[in-house]
Image 1 (tube, helix red, strand yellow):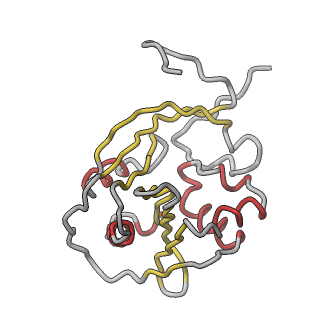
Image 2 (image 1 turned 45 degrees about the vertical axis):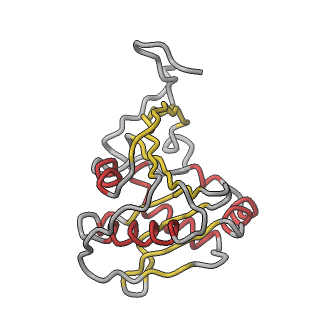
Length: 200
């Protein structure tokens, strides 16, 4: 249901985000890369590995949904034959994540994408995105790659996706329970996003 123009209250204990959906319908020209960033395909990843990397990338952006998944639900998702999980390596540690979903014929959704905070501005994200797009567009019959970002993500995320060749096509408003109030994330996560508690 579309919202009417004007202000709309967000329930206490919840967090709002403006979600921007973006797509590309043709293979973009390659972008120059800085540095060599090893990547690996993670086949049938274990939930503990995935949660750790997801948390290290996303806590500052209030990524929480998948932390609430059971091991069974996570394996069902991550072991799906239509899903590819790519990790960016720094030494012996995984520090970046790209999750590609080919479940819809002719389409690839980049469901999750990010690098840990220490890699922001280093070119690591560009290398990971370049690889993700190469993997996506190498699929026969691919016609579309798409993803979404939101106002809780890194402030340069939207510009990064635009420079990567994506074009915005839809806005949404997401309202979610604040994951800092139920213990999913620590209360000091995302200090720039106020916690609004219900009044007694």
